[in-house]
Image 1 (cartoon, rainbow, N blue to C red):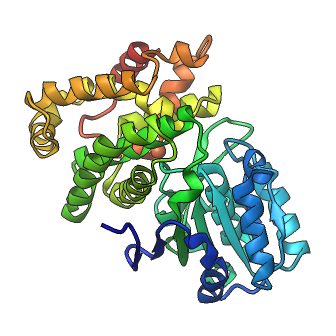
Image 2 (cartoon, protein in one colour):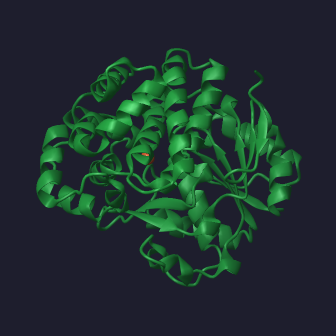
Length: 381
Ligand SMILES: [Fe+2]
């Protein structure tokens, strides 16, 4: 089967190897004539980025780039990017990269024409209605990892540099108008990042699937997303140039992020504060947390995960699923404890407080309390 397609769900997606060549058409379709490419420092000088800038220039779009983005983008990165964006009178963003480049790019385009401060748009209740829709600029999203799925999401995660809390900035119109999913862009990802980002996609699928909210569309997508990860992440990890595996992982990432409209859960509730306070890799942190969270949620998810195991060809029901997850982590070089990710002297009180305040907490199938969340942290640290 040729792994190429043009999809309109949940947004316009040009999927297939080599389709970064359509960056000019994608900008035109999004109504962008003068884009600012937003990416992170690590990607700025890499060939995939330089080639994309060349393609932009050839399409008459210039080659402007902002890359002063920290691994966990914060409000200072947003302010610096907005200054560049407004000064240059850009009319749209090409959000390019992994989670940090995509999220910052989306938030910059969202903030382009807003007059209220960033934190007024945190994902709390109906705060998003405070935004002036006319001030939201269009985005073309181009993922270069296969994990976050932010290219199909309606939010951006920005860390508050003072409180070290990860805040979700949400607006329905933050969804990129055009996405280019070109698996060739992910071929150069190092093994550890392939594993960490791929397991982020897996965590999105597992948590969405286990969330108690009613959303059968998401349920189906999450299940098939898990299957793609099971089949293709070990292959992409073993051979980074396996383009078929890279393509299916890119789909799994977009599916996981689409599915988690149904909810996330304790894996992300734990991982967000750990990442914000200890600067660990998001997907790798999720992977370390998953085995303990599965046991924590066992009373609520034993049956549904047994069903998933059946679909995935895993024997042994819920216990078989847990054994599979442990084996996958080991195969992909994921450590068993957060201390192995250099999490030193954690302030558990603060981690518990931030986890309970995290928006993912509400999607966990077992209610999280100060007491059981502390125990959960102790189990993963
Ligand atoms: Fe995630």
